[in-house]
Length: 159
Image 1: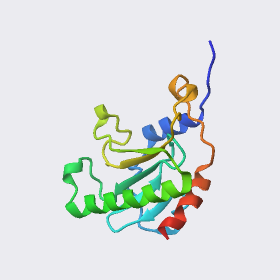
Image 2: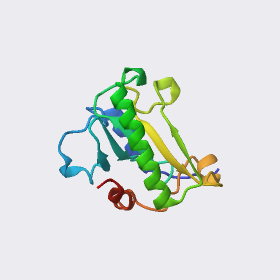
Image 3: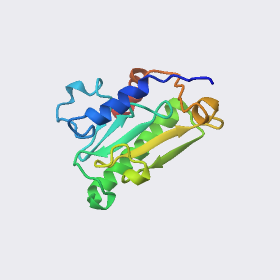
Image 4: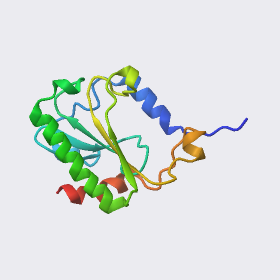
């Protein structure tokens, strides 16, 4: 039997179990935004790189307010969330030239929500043929760049 090691996943699993606060309940100070991978702060929502992305450029849009159910968002929150998603799609298109995107939310544990008590919208760039042996069989992702490189590429679109 062959083994494919992805030790970075343990950080994610251990972090969920030991997290003292919600990962999407961020503080108001933007001084650590780059370290925390926060690319943009809107009035009601923010854009953050996914710490454990499916592909390079995988971003999340989340409201500052700790909400679990999409129907609890105000019209202003959902409008701004969609506006940020559109802006992020344009930035990702210009930066990475993907063939398409996945856009969606996992609401509730049974729907696959990794953070079930604070909703967030995923925007994932996709390329023809981007699903391969490593991801499909090995459950391991191979990303061609670091998160800090992704941050530096996307930040100018939101300055």
